Length: 71
Image (cartoon, rainbow, N blue to C red; front, side, top):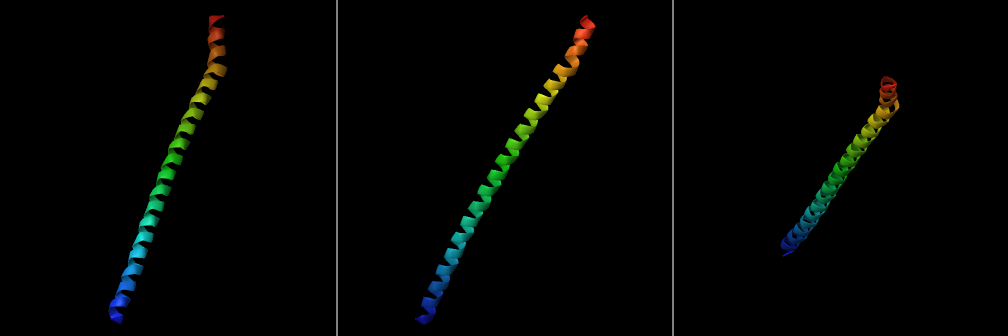
């Protein structure tokens, strides 16, 4: 009788540890998803900055050259 109750408590502790494992795996998945979102946001920001820099370079350097050629 004592052995079966001990086994039940061991099973209970095992099930609770497996549920904590599933919770930790959910946390890992959420953290991974957050990192992917952050990486996508950083990539978009980098692309926007590169586009803005290219537009500024075109406006500042190329437009005076075109005006000089036209004049």
